Image (cartoon, rainbow, N blue to C red):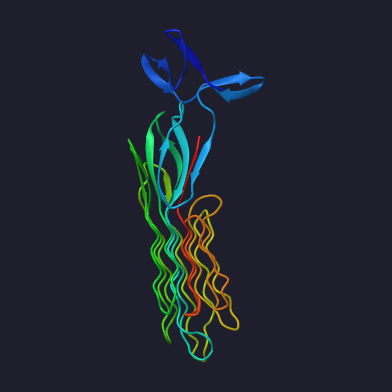
Length: 281
């Protein structure tokens, strides 16, 4: 449904409505019309758009829209890799990657405004013994009066021969939010410590945020694994991924979640989750 006015003989869509309140003209956020018993907006059609692939995009605010519910997260860090842990040698597992920072809330916009969007990539998976995970890339939303900048999660630290497991990467922080609520990504967990008798002990679970869970640690037996990735983002998604044991089974983080660390050089760590931007109006 759209509200139209006739101007110079031509019907045109109304993008904004103003009312005079105590001598001051004020912008109406919406105008509702009862259509067959159902109240509907007369200024715009409700809609949504998601950006879930890494890259640069452009979004034009639809006609009549003055407020957009926004969720965004940066890329998660990838897990570190461990040292040999096959029973013939003893090394620590890699730490899980940290989750990317995230924001959520209502963003004030104007019809026709153009927003530039950068969705951050997750840190790339690592292979080989004792490799540090990669930090996730930043996610940004910019435009007139809008400046949102979110830092990615830090990659997990590597395990080493006859040492404790690698430390988990720190969660990313929000650099600017334009008034939206923000969270720091969950930290990745430490990898399993070297076992003097050969093999590794289990990795720990990654930390959760208020809105998303961290990944579990690599399972025990007979050999065990890296730390879980930290959680990130709001609502559904944002889970940090499980740490590996040296039988594989790894997946990447989700919506900015951190990647799990690997048990040893025979398995790669998990990649961090790609960032995410969602608009609903």
